[in-house]
Length: 369
Image 1 (cartoon, rainbow, N blue to C red):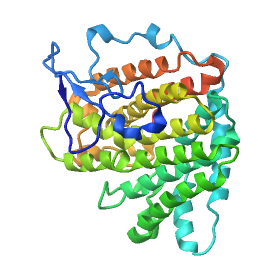
Image 2 (cartoon, rainbow, N blue to C red; image 1 turned 180 degrees about the vertical axis):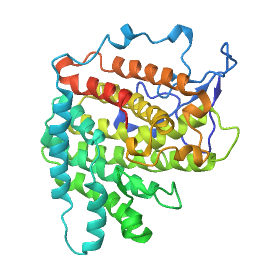
Image 3 (tube, rainbow, N blue to C red; image 1 turned 180 degrees about the horizontal axis):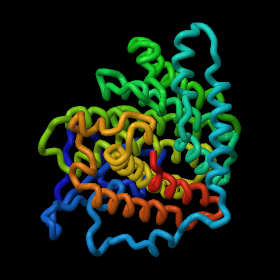
């Protein structure tokens, strides 16, 4: 076994027996790789974060039966659930950031924040909170904060100095409407207000849990989370020898980190035990990486009109992606393995309360845009 070395990211070797509130969120990352050859000669990545193989072997072939072992209850209306929760989140976001002086910055913030989207992250936050015994009202401030930060990341990601994108959610990107200077400030303002919102608006939760939630959120987006993934992603552009372990590092941090934070925050403010929080953390890691694998696949198989954003931009930028390293078929196999592993993390919870999370896995895995 050889440990992945990507700079000075702190990575203790185990988190299993340590309460989550005593560990920085991404100090728990340990990536190890072995390089046995498959029949095709492709190296196989085995990662302890999030404990899945990027190239499923014969021993881990995922069958339809296995995937359906713990599927969503047949009578659960996931579409209705998503619409109802997204409506609640949209109302809360609209109320949280009202149009006030200075108008221009608040217009820019609201333009991207209220531009639509499936609200997957805040809905996951609410679902996790309700799963461990909390209420929707308890989770709403944390859910909105996660969506504010997600929107910030999209605004900044689209800038010419980053991904240089002109389209987001079917509309011109923020900097195309308000200019690069205001777009940067709008993202900054959303980031700052997210933490204020959790601190000031969360009700019925102990101060220690609120502080713990804020700490989790901060770590998920800093140099141990989203920013770390973004930096390694930038450094990997145009590099010929980028491997699977580096790609997984990028996506675990850049994409999975905030999805994980959404679920963990919901579990924390909902009153979940340390064991429940950690099970949901692992679940979220799997679906976070699953989200990115599917995103990579869609980027090369769908049109800009279907996606609501520029298709094929990773190929143009010569970015490393799962289809680029594994091909489409192996990438789809990896997505199925993540799907199975995510469902396994929900075993032991009340199936009725866990139904939204089971359904969310299928939604992420089979989305078309």
